[in-house]
Length: 602
Image (cartoon, rainbow, N blue to C red; front, side, top):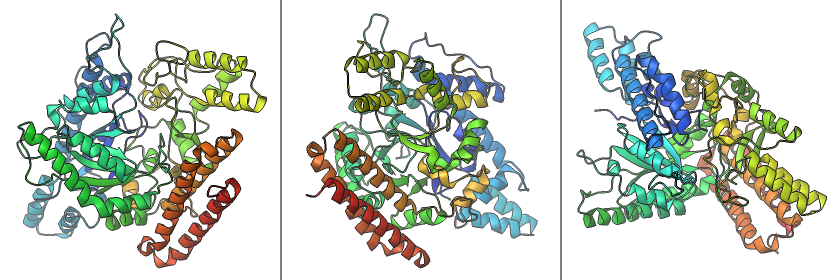
């Protein structure tokens, strides 16, 4: 019996379109990936694209029908599952010959995987009977990667009936969860990101799809993306009280990531992972005690021992050495490789123009922006068609975007009905207010820029699929937004799935930036830059003193992180140790200069 986990990495959710069909591209090779299910119009478009590919007629699910969002999601996930299962059956029956999917499946496995070693034995065997015996064992051991979904908990807009009342259990996130729960996916997970949503978690309590199954396991699992140990404990216990077991905590760097960036208070990834390493059993035992007590109280099937609880990490990983260190030193179950896969057309869906822009991206093309209507910092690639379109609207005196999707419509500053801060309606009203305040010119320009920066993400993050598959999304809106992590500056080659997998496992090296800093150093500098920006902004508005406690804590946490990395001798090879320590010393000098300039500890 072989492990169903073929690979030690997964492909996290990226944007809306970029991993919308990644399982169809990679799951048959045993690679797990995550689909965003928040944008149901995009999902409906993908249904229209993929049904004909399997010889079945596409039947629209109109927005006029009850619970249309959940139904669209359920049907698309069932469609993806059907396609993947067909692919796997075809792969299992393929010949072991050059270029076949079954050969690619085993060639991509890590070299220390037992199935890779068995496959190599097959390739070296000349005895036909023995070859057939080994081939049969290999075919039966093939398992697809997990088809997982992501729900960003903050994207949970209310949905209203014609009479103005809210639809019961009809909010965006709850409808998405219901759509997933009703799907026929098995051995799959829902990934909750962006923090705790009590309303969503309360609804989860009544979803039987997450109960213990007849195999004493879970057909559908819960993964919670967290930034630190405390968040994992709080959310794990909260869900356990509702009879929901968290099967994985997915730790993501607060700043060295793609998409929305949720900065910690100066807590760096290394020390965070160390806390998970040392307190892992405590975390499992604490959550299990609450979980089992809840199951017993509800007269439900319960466990004698804690179910499996995985710990994984993602954010800024760029080399095999970093990947191997994370897994081996911190005893992690998986690593997430996101941004580099944007340059792998066999794995993600990026339109040609944006793909070329990504491949040429340097550090100056990347920005930790204020462009998201959520009010959360957002990694952003400049020069996209969406960036140009936004600038053109501003130049023409018509800032803001049409708001067709309304997923991020939360602002009630000027209207009773929530609107999006990237919309033309909001920006027109906000700019008029700023003009009426007679602010000093520098202050006016700063606030105006904050308004104009906001960009439509619902359409911008979906259009890559519309363009790639020549399917209508929003007829008049064609611009693309993309949100890679800073790590994209180190990858400039458009490569195959095999090549990217070889890079992850150390069989080749596709890095194009020879001076790329270690991922921990890169994150450290991102935090120092973030602290500097925050300090300068508050200094200009005389707001440093009220936030002195926050800044002091941030500074001290960065100092502690630097001290931790200096003590971690296993982190780098001996030949790289001096360079790593020098980078830490330089960061410390920069941090102490901030302390001196802004008197953080005085």
